[in-house]
Every structure is written in C-alpha cells, then in structure tokens.
Length: 316
Image (cartoon, rainbow, N blue to C red):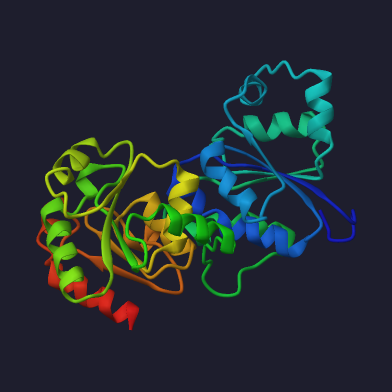
C-alpha cells in the first residue's frame, strides 16, 4: 500500500497476547496513525486490553478475536462466507501479529481478496519487543526514529477519574504493584512493604498497593497491614486511569509495569529471571533494576534501599 493509493485507507490489525505484549505494539499503531491520520484502523484483539488504544485515538474500532469467523481464517479448508469475504476485502491492509508458522492465515486473507497482508511474528528473540513489532512496517517505508517507545495518552479526564479512585485524596500516590503473571518474577512482598515504609518516611508520597485478580495470596497478606491502602479488582481501564493520576510507580516485570511506563509515569521496574533487554519497559521516566543473576532468588536479594534511591532519582 502506498501513501497515494487511497486518501483514507482502511487498515485491520490482528493482535493477541497479554497486556505487556499489547503495550509493546503501541509504537506500530502510533506509526500507522501518524502516517495516515485519516485512516480507518480496526483492531481485532482482546477488548479489555485493546480498548485502551481506542481511547487514546490510535484505532477507531475494537473487535474481539474470540469469534468463530476469526477461527475460520486459521483453517486449512476455511469456510469463508460471502459476507465475511466482503468485509475483509474492504481493507486495504491487514497487519497480523497472530502466530502463523505455516502462513495459513495470510493465505486465507489473500484468497478472501485483501490487497496487502503484512505479518509480524509475535515471538521476540534478539531485540526489544517494541522494535521487533515495528519491523513489518518497513514494507510500508515506515521506520522508527531511534528506539520504539510505547506511549499512551488518555487525556485529562482520565487522570481526574483516576484521582477520584485513589484512596489517598490530597496526596501524591506512589503505586506499588507486587504481582505479575508469574510468582517467579515477583520481588518478595516483605520487600515491597519495607519499601512502602521508606517511601512514607522520606515523604516521597503516599504508598498505595495495587493488586489484580491473580494476586489473591498477596491481597490476603496485605489485609494484615490496614495501614497500607490497597486498590484491588479494578478492570484494566480503571487501572490505567489510576496509573495516569499517580506520582510514581514501582512494580515487577508485568504488563501493568509496561502500562505505567507508556502512560509517562515515573516507573521503577524490577527484573529477575526474565530478559529486560527484550521486555524491559521503555519510557521517558523509567528505571530498570536487574538482579545480579537472572533468578528469582537473586531478585529477592535486592534491597529496598536500592530501589528507594532509584525512585528518588526519578522524582528529582
């Protein structure tokens, strides 16, 4: 697709994956929007995550990947009806980040009449995920100027709503997220609690713990510390709003940490067994601490004082 093919091209992006995977795709979405500001961009993904891109104006519509007509596109003998084929033909470009090792999805899209199909392998190997996911756009002569940096701008109303949800009105909240998608990536909760005490003692802000649906054990432990406010069970859209309103954020290698960095918050990220070179959050105000060895045990040895000093440097 060339820039003068259509004044208002129609683009379909297919993207699965978890929160962090999606956040690392934001530079590609932003690049498409910057190249063709008037384009219609539709995103097939997981709505609770992908809706953030719509709120930020990067896409015009979000639909769910969990539909029978999408599953058909992976079939070696697809039954694509006339209505579905016509809907696919209406797009000038389809950019797919769905794992497609045999090219079945791409072949079916072309057979349905899609003019141009680009594929980005969702598996990240030798470079940062955000840079890797930008690679398919080189076929459109779209190249990043330097490192690809995920950015998500939700607007002032989102921050106002986030402030209303914070349990520390009138204070600058420092959000601490002690969970992640894997317990092996978690800095011990006792360390987070010690850090919270130091943040309060240094008057850097009011520590607030953020826990998700998968953090039941952490939530139960925090219930024993009623002096430390906890935000629990918020849908992702509300988490994003709260993050946009906080003064700073500290968390493990998780999708929420990527989200905090993309929202421009001063972000301290703690990495142990996972690869920070490929999956470390990027942002204007990000500090990544890596454990001495890439193990959970080495991560546990990082001292709260070290993390506190990094947070102070960011806030200064």
